[in-house]
Length: 334
Length: 181
Image (cartoon, each protein chain N blue to C red):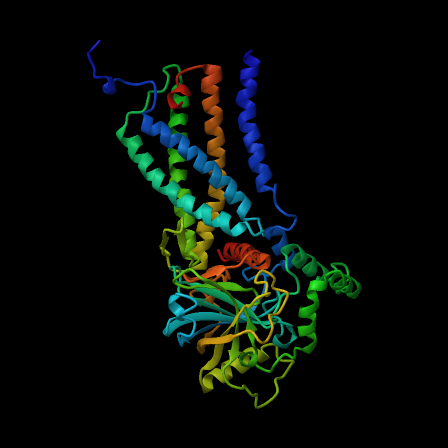
């Protein structure tokens, strides 16, 4: 009898410990976890202290001048008529914090409004208007296909081709890639939210939207950039800013019938209503350092009152992967 | 025997309030631990609602921990059995102090690390707790690691607590386990 009692004393905590260990090691998780995703992104030799994606960038400061045109769609404070300061970051895709500017296939503009109150908003916008894939599993497979072979250091074209052939949802992305010509300035790119979100108004009515930062006026370069200069785009932007602020329109596109707000691979028709919410006025830049945009995780799920997340699986996954990247570089900062 | 009023008599059991708080907290801590361990890995769509609930229940746990501490300090707990050695009594008291410390450290580090990352924390959609700290990567790093490793400390303490309680109830067969039932 006493043996049974001893067994209970041992087995109850042992079972609990086993269950906790199993959950901590991924019980119930899809094969692709935030940790595995970031492991794949950072590769064999991570750049300690840097973001695991878009490692190279610089900080911005400026103001958003809202014209109030979205006020009937959202009660977000920053979309009422008025001015809200922001900090931000312009970056290029890739894991290498010293990569040459002109080599990167993707550029991005990230913004952060407010810090930690209910009106805070973060958005990380990129040059492609759509995602290549619609799920974190497919995104993982895409990254794996694009990763260089550890033995040769080269990408495997056959593997890349096989990936895109087996993922027809990549069609719109590939079509964009074919026609996209990188510009000679960060100031002349269009930066897209890619994922859709909801604007929520006072009555609780939701409208699915995507948005883009679009140059407010045509931007011309006096001289073509020196592609060999690894800082070519950064230097150009700093020089441009000395002449005056860089201004983008923040243009919202409203989903119509038949548009799936949960699928980031399909562009919405050009005929959808587009509303300019106001002007993003970039007034200053600085190198990343403590106290500026370096401290910020541009998590697209930090949304103000008056905005809400869609069920887009990529959007949800972005947030979780950014959090893991943020934890890693935070730990490395100590 | 002096004629004591019933509620003044040294009791073998914890007060009803303390027992309710104990079992409510037990449920809450297990949900928070399992949600926490799962949500930091997930790339799935349930990640967002789970993390939102974890934060709300974490704030609730902090509120309950304060109430619990008040109950603990205003009610006389049952005495430990006489046949426990002085070392065991010290161990038991030390473990309980650590459990109380963890019940405060976990929600506080969680709440503060959100502040250091510039993230608002919502309480069941009722109100938003603004960031309590300036946004700073290093502060976030310290609090985030404290929260992560603190969870393992709390798990170890809870398992020790359960093992000791069962040992009292089933092997020693003294009053300790019964005092909380």
